[in-house]
Structures are given as structure tokens and as C-alpha cells.
Length: 485
Image 1 (spheres, rainbow, N blue to C red):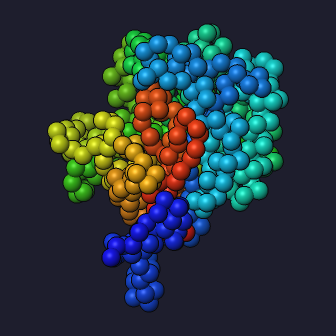
Image 2 (image 1 turned 180 degrees about the vertical axis):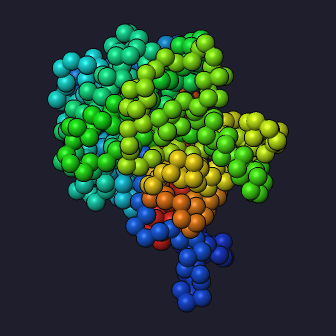
Image 3 (image 1 turned 135 degrees about the horizontal axis):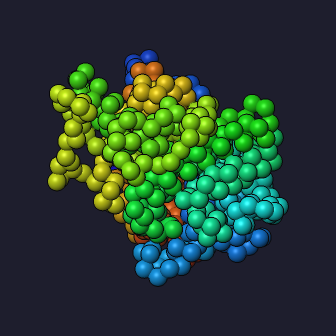
């Protein structure tokens, strides 16, 4: 007779073991003397965490002096977001953060990557700071520390103050300087309890999607020259932010970016195709990671841009390449598979098969090997000495079963596959030190609104009830045992 698995039992480690016992395999405890203890283990002290962002979960958009952001404006423009959803309430995390910290504690995570809303701290982007806005994050930091969880803030996760957008947004050379002022101010007031900060999240996303394609805030479709200049201002903001944090924060505070690099995977793992993948990764990241790590735009990038190339100075390139303490990388998909070719540029793209597997969103092509090649490229191409996977996860067609549980076996499959490739990287000496699963809970998923769910916890947005999914039990086991389960 099969074991009966209840909704309550799935919220516990024992519940996962019971589920494994019902299947006859998973959950059994192998003899520690017979198994290879390093086969799927992660390094001792590996930093397991989870991640969210401010606009996606906080709500309370008009409380305690917060100013409007570009995402407030964009989401309130009819037709921009599926079902015309907004982040006005989202997960109500602003009022429920203590409850959400307990979700993290139950998972056993050691760190939490969250973002600070720039318009809460500086409602107009510049000028007078808003003490109540920063106080919210101070209380969140204290709550995390009280529960044994390291707070690791990201200073910009796309919610640009609308007042700055009104003055040109990322097209304006004033915005990078405004970001540096905000970053320095915030780090100075939190670094007594916060030891590391990420600067900007996914420049390649908010510039390309927001300024070139118009499908994210602020919804612009600019010509190439203006997009290239906005891109340059974003990486300049990163460099100025690094310098401002070092100048203002407590000595020893550490800082780095959180970027979604273009990950080029060798179609076959032979030396010539691996070299082609490295060449392709460096070139396709020329406007973001390459210039941040090398302090130059590649000849290929500048030649392709031609008259549309960004305007910059040698001093700005040096600022952009300000040394960082670690590199964060968001990994979801292999951007492209490549093969070696004779002659320049040394690589060619291999098209994805029409039947290549995908998750619930079309762009979420399943490619676990990206989790190996992304960190390896950061280490081999740019010499990154400390790497953190700052986001990884997937949307799935999460529907509660009659017993109320979300049996997201597809997400568990996805995570197991990707974590196996991450463990491969660490076993080979790639310096990956941490992993932050996206996301702690279902939330406002940008242009998808609340239709797509990435969370370890199901959220009923009508009642704000959080319920652990099967994937939460899986991740809890991974953390507890420090190995792929």
C-alpha cells in the first residue's frame, strides 16, 4: 500500500522522505560507508540562498514617502502587462517581511538576496533622502540577522525613480552619477550589518528589453545609437557605484555586479568547440561583462556598431572596470550553442532544434549545461576569483492539487539538472561560492504579471497565503545535505 502524503507532511523534511519512501527510492538513507561522499557534494561552506526583488514583492507603492518608479508608470499603462496587473500590492512583503523571513528560515538558507527600491530611499532619484524608506530595509536586515540569514542587497533591480526617467533615464549621463550617490548613501548606512552588496541587476535585460524592444519599462524602442549610449551609462553606473561603496561603506565591505551574461555553450565538448564558445561568450558580452571586466569595448563590438557606437572616454572605461570582489551571474538558459569555424570570428551559432525542451515560458529553453559553462567562462575568460549564481529557477504551470499542494515535479527536475551541472563546475575547481534560487515565492513577473510563477512557495494573491511547493522540500534537502538530491 502506498504511503499517504499529506499537504502538511510535504512542508517538512520528513514529508520529503515519506514521498521518497512511497516511490521506493528517494528519501532512503544510503550507507555512508558505501557511497562516494564527493560524487554530488558541494564545497564545505557553500552559500545557499534565495532571491527576490523590490518591485516584484513589496507592494506599498504609496507608503512612507516612496516615490513612483518607471515600473509603476509602465504597469499602469493599459496593455503593457498581462491582464493589466500591477505591483501595487504584489506579495505585500512590505508588511509581511517577518513572515517571509520565516519561510527562508524553514528552508535553511544561509543568505537572502533582495533589492532595495531606489525610489524608497530617494523618491526623486536625487536630492533629499527619505529616512522611512531606508528604515524598512534596516528592519529587514535586522530580522534576517536575528534568524541567522545573511542579508545581501542589490542596489538596483530595475525600479528607476520616475523622476529620473523624466530627465532622460539611462540615456542621461546624470543617471550614473545619481546611482553612485544613492549607492554610497545606502551602503554607508547599512554596512555596519551588511558585508556585501550587488550593484545593478541584469543590465543586459533592462537596457535591451526597456530601451530597445519596449516590452519592459520604460517601454522605449530607441535607435541603435541611443541604445548603445544607454548601455554605456548602465555599465558606467556600475563602476561609479563600486567606487562610491568603497568610499562610503565600512572598511572591508565587498561589492560586485549581478549580470545575466550571454552563455555560449560548445555544441560538442572538444577543444576546438570549447575555444569557439569562449570566443563567442567574450564577444557577445562585449557591451556588458566584457567591458566591466576588461575596461574596453572589443574591436568587433565597435566595428559592428559603426557610427552608432557609444561615446566614451578612457577615464570612463577605467571607472567601468573598477575592481570587484566577486561576480554575480543569473543563469536560466544557454543563450546559444556554437561550433568552431575556420576564419574570423572563430565561431558560428548552431540553431536550436524546433523541439528543444522548454519550461512554461517560451524563452525558458532547458539547457542545464549553461550552469556549468557560465561560471567556467567567467573564470577562464575574465579570471573571476569568486562567483555567485545570483539567480536560477524556472516558471512552471503551478496548480494546487485537490489536497492544496503544488506538486511541481517539473521544477524539481529542472533544479536537479541544473544543480548537477553546478556541482560539476565546483568539483572541477571553478570558484562558485554561492547559489541564490529564484525565487522565494511567486511574485509579479514583470510583463507576465502574476500569470507566471517562479516561486518555491505558492502565493494566493487574493489572500496572500504562502504555501510551500514540492520544490521547497527538495531545496531544503539539498541545503541540509549540501549535495544534489
